[in-house]
Amino acid sequence: MKFGVTIPNNWGISDPQQVVAFGPLAEELGYDSVWVMDHLFNTGYIQERLQDKPYYHPLGTLSYLAATTKKVILGTSVLVLPYHNPVELAKYTASLDQMSGGRVTLGIGVGAMTEEFQALGIPMRQRASLTDECINLMRELWSSPSPSYHSRRWDFSDLYFSPKPVQQPHIPIWVGGSSPGALRRAATLGDGWHPSGVSPEEYSLAKREIEDLAKAAGRDPSQLTWSLRAEVQVHGRPSSGRAAGRTAFPGNDPAGMAAAIEAYGNAGVEHVILALNSGDVDSIRRVMENVASEVIPQLR
Image: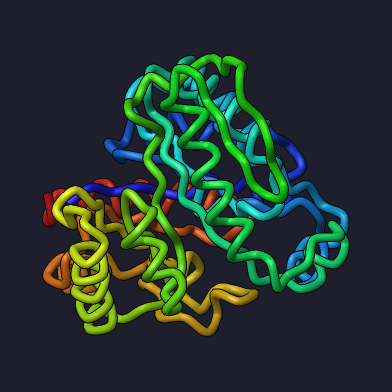
């Protein structure tokens, strides 16, 4: 079992140095990965939580962490692909992969916030097709020596794209979500599955479905990475916002957390990302330290 932890780029912390300090701390404590979230506007439930407080750009945050860490995976949990220009995103992430020595992993999703799609002028009904095209286009740019792509939205050939990522054939893409569409996307386009809010039983059933879909598509399911984003009750109570309705690990109960993670391990999870949903830097540090000393050693 590998362990990751979220960096609070999305919790309105006024001093960005307090945010990025959690990257080196996670590495020092022995975590395998650090993860950031993605929203562009403070609208909807983000506005309810933050108003006008800072929500730092996920890739800007990871770029800083690439320079202050040496080993941890730098991941997004998740990047909302329809929000982003896939060519620019491919360029940014390939550059980051080069500068970090091949440590980038993209957890991706289709998005769910109606208010943000409206504010960006992006038709929400097109989010699935935009996501699939973004994945295919980025992989073409990352892996082909002479990339070309032709669709209704994109039309290019007879050019070069650089830099290529360190990781070949491409940067790993873990597909978030547990809808039927997300399961199909993980099976046919993903390098891994990265859901949240599912029980161990649901995880096990969905994992088998993804494996069957991958085999039907001519892919080897043993090459997929099985991960989980797990919400953590940092203050001993359900987190605010949408996470409040999900099953959450008890941040003040190491034994209970270890038992919960073990159940997911038995369901097939290989890499668990602990989402410490709080803007209280002291509480985040305390939970990170407790998990590192009392939970992780039991499960590795």
